[in-house]
Image (cartoon, rainbow, N blue to C red; front, side, top):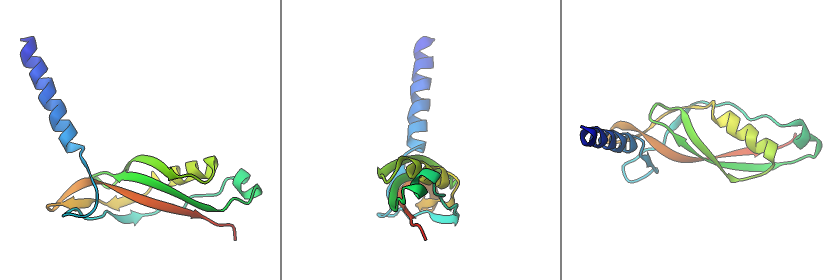
Length: 116
């Protein structure tokens, strides 16, 4: 009886992992499109120090259009990096498609911080 339970669990994990496959755009996989965008704010510390530049993030846009895992690829300032992540987590997308079905797609988003 334990063997059957173990096999069922292994099959469930395999199905779960397949459902979570993350694609890159191209080769029949379309880019997600932004539906709702939230601007990242400046931190007081970064404004005082007059920090300007870009924060590059790699993110997974899930099949439901929400943002999943986010990784900082190009850091600018710890506080501004965090502002960019928090902002991106609030974005909403029409998901990328593969064979007409919504799939998780890895994208790169660049936030520009400029003082005016």
